[in-house]
Image (cartoon, rainbow, N blue to C red; front, side, top):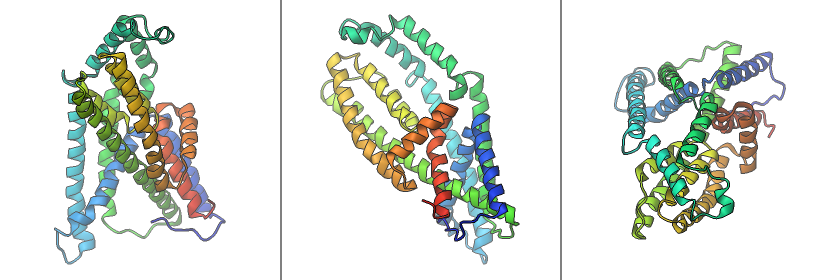
Length: 344
């Protein structure tokens, strides 16, 4: 729970902590350390959420120390292991024949080429000339944005290493928090408060975005695996599209555009009518999700949808895709600082 700061005149220690925090947040974005920070915070928050449930199974005369250390130690190992296995499983699925992104892109390219004769002339003019052109344009886009996506070529190994190190760091911090420490010097206390605000902002935004992505994936999966088959329509690579819908759904705003475009293009493999039906369904669902988004995320950080969109646009212009991911968390943190001083 955030504490209110009574005085509106910050101390020199608080000002120093704000400057250091601003430097760290910029450093993280400039040097592509956002995956490591998010991984560390995810492990840290999961451990804190689950510790009360586990600690009671480790009775001790000093439950606040020994039991919590046991609980946190076990949780750190379990959570880091599960997250690592989940990540490896997702990567393996997306590289397999059943879920290959390469196969999906090739299929989308072929669908676009085959659908040119049934699409309106004004739309055909904006589409690639053929499957080869589509693949070339996709490859060019990936090369151009490789530094932002951090998952292409050699950047994949670096990002994976950062994520693993981030999870280990998050676990170490959670384990350290198991021992109550309240002997901070003034600057350390001010920095610890900034850290508490930022981790609280992360928890509110990311877990809200996880809920939104899960809801979006469930509704999309229902459409792809139940509604369309009941109508006699069976799309290819359904499992791949559902998996990608969840993954890209973790990216605010842009994620929905990516998943929607993918589903509509694949729907063209059946007919223009199915593609239009898919588009209308997704528009209706995402109109509802827009308000759900604003309610879930906005209520968590007490921000309107337009505030989040402005933050996302500004951060995207400055830092690209990493800025889109970081924008809601950074904005929530800034609002936490302002609310703590009763300024907003």
